[in-house]
Structures are given as C-alpha cells and as structure tokens.
Image 1 (cartoon, rainbow, N blue to C red):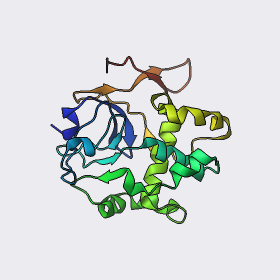
Image 2: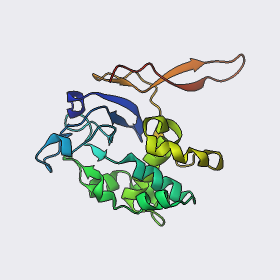
Image 3: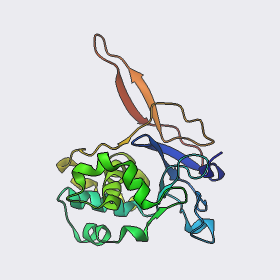
Length: 201
C-alpha cells in the first residue's frame, strides 16, 4: 500500500507513466520526513506525481496555480496575476519526497527534458507540463485558474506530457476522468475523456 492511500484522492492522469493524483484533503506524508506534520507535505487540491512510499516516490505541488501561471507565461501570455505567480520560486510549493532527489528525477527524465533545458529549468519544465494539463483539463477544480480561461482560444496543447489514464485504477481512490471507447463506422478507435461521477468529498 502506498502513502497516497491514507487520504482521499483522485487519480487525474499520468506523467510519463507515473500516476498523477489530486488530493481531496490535507495531511499525507507521501514518504517525506522533511516536515514534522503530514499536513505540511501536501494540502487539499495539491497535485502529487507519484503516490509516495510503496509506489513511486512523490513530487508534490502544493500550489497548482503557479504551474498554470508558468505555463501561460511560457506560452507568451502575461498579466499582473500571471506574472506574480510565475515568478514564485518552485521550491516554495514543490516538495521532492523521500525516495528520489531532485537530481534523480532530472536524471530519469533527462531525455524528455532535453529539448526544453535551454529555456526552462527542470522544476519549471515539470511545472509547465502540469500547468498545461490543469489549464485545459482541471481548471474547474481551481477557481483562481478559471479566470485565465479566456486565454484558451489563443493556446493549443504542445507539451502533452500528462495523459488521461486508460487503465482501471486499482487504488483505494477513483479516477477523475471516465474514459469511454467509441468506434465510428470504418474509423479507428477514439479515446473520449469525460468527467466521471465524483464521490462525496
């Protein structure tokens, strides 16, 4: 059993094969001894790449809005609110939990990160990937992000590092998206992502 199982959560996607979760309550160690209290590691609505000890070492993002701001800024959009959040140090809201250091994460994903390293640090590349996914797929969960949706018509998805999972979630949570299969006559199978019925939070 992984650390993520001790709190309510939803699997929202996969980041290059690693499960990505949205936490529905405060307080989870996620394999981290950096903080004395679990609630300091991951907050409600935090995004966790990996489920922590027992699964994949976790990288927790406690302020997803900063990731969206970095993505929008990287895409060439700017406003006072976007610039303020995009300038925040990633270390203020990203925690590499026990099991993998920041350097080890970078080593594992060096090939995926390679084409971006001239314009983004590794942390900001991860943030940009997560921010893009949240902006297009999870914006309804974050009121502070919804106000930026007016920019959507000017943007297209181009990093594509976070995917909606196809397989059934075997954890104690559930999936955020319900993936349905549709095969039009004489056409290839298409994946349709739709919001799944959500449990009471």
